[in-house]
Length: 142
Image (tube, rainbow, N blue to C red; front, side):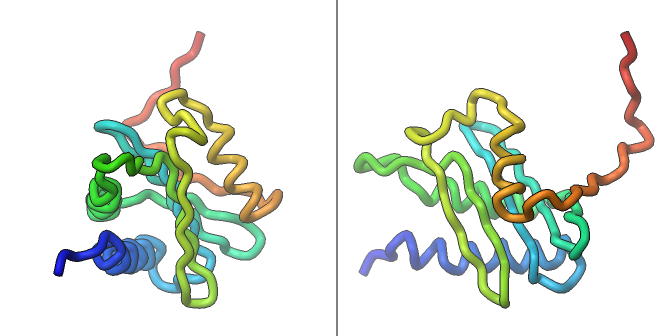
């Protein structure tokens, strides 16, 4: 009997959750993953609710690899579309995944407001703490 895509995606989304817990360093409650993906590019954003603030954490190569695997599991055959946005949340020891598709949103057009809207929907007006700039970064001035 051929494997259903959910037989593959279920364990794969569990692996994504395990990697997210590794990234945040422990307690899974309050993890939110926001991903935009397209042909040959991916933009995963990991957030952790710390009570009074939300921390944005760097992802990992393994997380990106798992997300690519999940995206490619969605075959373009038979009219099935691959998702463009994935939102993955862990609450109360369970994960919930939702998708948006190309006919709903065009992720090829850069729009930072999409991510901000998703964050506000989950966390309200809590401040977001981003990681510090790398020491190798520099600021361009006019």
